[in-house]
Amino acid sequence: MSEIAHDSSAKLLTMAGQIADFYKSSGATAPEAIAGHINKFWTPKMREDFLAAASDRTLEPPALEAAKGLVRRRKAEAF
Image: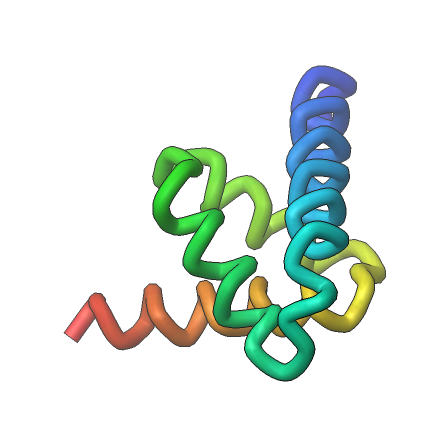
């Protein structure tokens, strides 16, 4: 992976972590809120890059669940 791509991936993971921190007080609905925020405000390219980076890294549980939710949503939209 190029250094630029790595920097971009690191920034997306940081941003996802910040979003997760914001929605942490939502409790059980936090992953859904995080995924909703990412879907609403991030470009498709950012979401794809985030999912690729998330698969290689350890994320906090809410952000990880949000990433899984994004993957499930993406697969459902493909049909």
